[in-house]
Length: 325
Image (cartoon, rainbow, N blue to C red; front, side, top):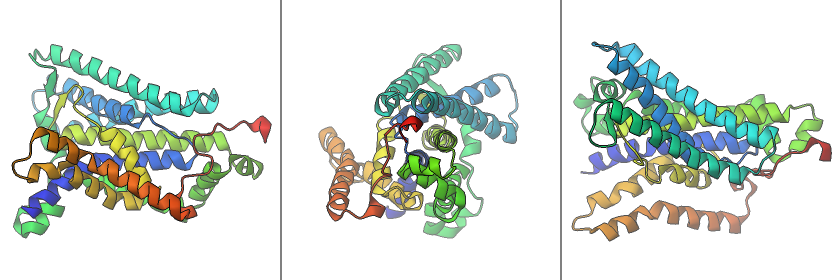
C-alpha cells in the first residue's frame, strides 16, 4: 500500500511543482503573481482545446502531434496570461495583489466558458470532456517500469510531464544560484533601484521572469488534466491546487529544488485521507487542510528565526518607479 501511496503522492504533487516553480521564478523578480491558479486553469483548458480540435479532425492520432499540439496551446495560453499580468503591473504599475486576484477570476471564467462550449460541441450531457486517447500518450511510462517492482512503480511509472517538472525545477534552481542571469534577476527582486543604477533592465527581467513563470505554471494545469485526471476536463475540477502551489512557494523558501520534495509532501498530505478507513466527509476536508497548516507553522518558525535566506525578495509586491530612484 505504501508504494501505491507514494506513487499517487508524486502524481498529485507534480501540478503543484509546476505552479510553485513558476511562482518562484516570478517572485524572484519582485512580482507577486496571485493569478497562478487562474494561469494553471488557462494552461489546462488551452491544452484541452488543442487536443479536442486535433481528435475531432483526425481519424488516427499521430503520437508526436497528439502531444505537441496540446503542449503548444497550453504554453501560448499561459504565456498570454503572463503578458497580461506584466502589462498591467510592470508597464501600467497596477496593484499586483488586485491584478493577480483578478487574473485568477478571469482565468477560471475563461476555462469554464471554453470547457462548457467544447462539451456542447462534443454533445456531452455533462460539462466535461473526455480526451482519453490524447491522455494515453501523455501518460506513457517507461516499458520496463513494471519489471522493477516497487521502485519502478514509485519512480518510473509516470508520464514525461512528471520528469519534465523535476528537470525544470532543477534547471531554474541552477539558473538562480549559478548564473549571471540569476544574479541579475535576484538583484531586481531585492532592490530594483540599485539594479537599475547598475545598468540592469528592470522591466525586461520582470517581463521575462513573469512570462516564463506563467508558462511553467500553465504546464501544471496541462499535467493535471492529461496525467492526473486521465484526460477528463471538468469545470471547476482543479479545486484549490493553484492556491496550494502558492503555499508551497513559502514552504520551499523560494528555492525550486526544495519544491520537488515539498510537492511530494503536499501531494501526500492532500490524499492521505483516502488511506484512512472509515473517515467521513468532514474528516476528509479536515485532512485536506493539513498542507496549509504546515505552511502556516513553517512560516511562523522561519519568521521567528529571521534568516535572510528564508525570507521573500525584499521588493516583492512593490511597483518600481524609476523616477523615484
